[in-house]
Length: 586
Image 1: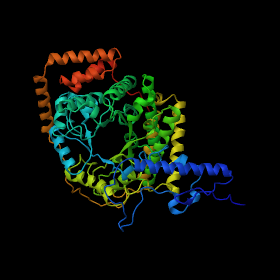
Image 2: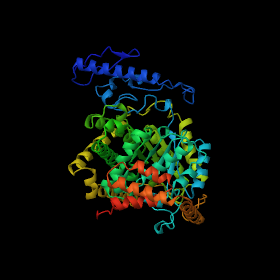
Image 3: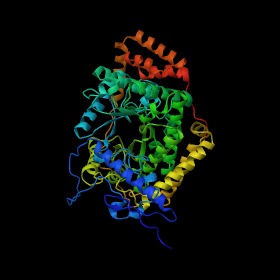
Image 4: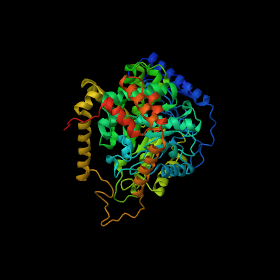
């Protein structure tokens, strides 16, 4: 069989591919022209960012590293087939497989954002100041269980949980203390809060006001992903329909008043932690994202007014290449659906920007120092997959909240990846790997098949009601655990390489029982010193807004300014929306 003649088109003087199989020469030349044009666009956008590279990018042996590599750089011109531009493309170009920004880490390293919060607001503030001094570049607030569930610290259900798994926040006063000495116009803050999201957002906005920072200048992210609560994490308050209404209120309010704020961090992390596979995490998370897009459109918003501020939150598990492929597939799927299915016109609406956290479920209580290694490789997957921000778990998190030493080591892992091992020197360095590209395609196909099944069952909310997601995840979790128990999957220190009679010798953080007493006393003082008549008036206005289907955020801001507590606000909304009880699933 005769080969097609090679095209004379080239980039940087190198010939491009002749074609694949039986493609006609005109088709081949058109595809090669597309590659050349896309390459030129990327070069122009890379140079056009105006960013000056602050350091030289070289190997340890002082060899220069280019910002981007393609098949041309290895002489494999035959690799530039008709699908190259359509499936891989270039960084900052549709379908964004190789990254959402043309410069990626050559322009700016990912945000190092350690998830942190414990005990009292004052102790959390001290930890934040410590982390910022150690080189952390963003904040991420962990709230305690009562705050996550909408209870004040002195509620009977809060007993024994105050300040244990995060910081206790009862009122605006607590938020003021947490961010004391931290300028909100100079830092971005992520808040891991869901059912009471709008309350904590309102508190943050008012803290900004008190600092003299306009809401338009605030940058950060609310997790605000209630769908994954019904699927995996189970920290809900209200039924799904009013919960979605609260979320679209946030989307609408922020589009006008807090335009730099990411209104939802659509979270696969908790879905994976519950036992999902990589394909399930990818598919169920993106399906949730599409449900939020549809809710925004149904609420009367244009897709391009809110979609650019939707972001994602993914898990980084132990399988290095599968995780990298998952992130690349996610960008490609989101871009295609936003452009073709939801008719978004702005490129910003097509970009899947995401935060990554290493897998808590992969950490072991046995030989906890080994968790440093696990976390480092998981962090590497996030970086090679093009994450925008990253949290690295601490070695002691199966045993307690992180100690100062443990969290410093976790942060240092990111800094070593950033500065010492060379993976941030060039954009998407694993692109073109036969294995990685096959994994990316496979995960994309698996996700699309899940989307078809979800649509067939009536959509995300219907699947939640049916228990479809929950059963799929439970089956996967069971299979994974059985593999470990049968030693078909080795977990070092757990089912092999075990140290008999091991004693944990690392220092652990302990939350003193005084924390709950101090927090309840502080809450008592807030209630004593505020204008309680004003609190009653603002809560009445909030109830009216909720009943009349008005956007509830303006009334909520007034409640927060009057120092109404989170628990008081939640009780008002419960009186309108009711509470959710999960139906039997199994």
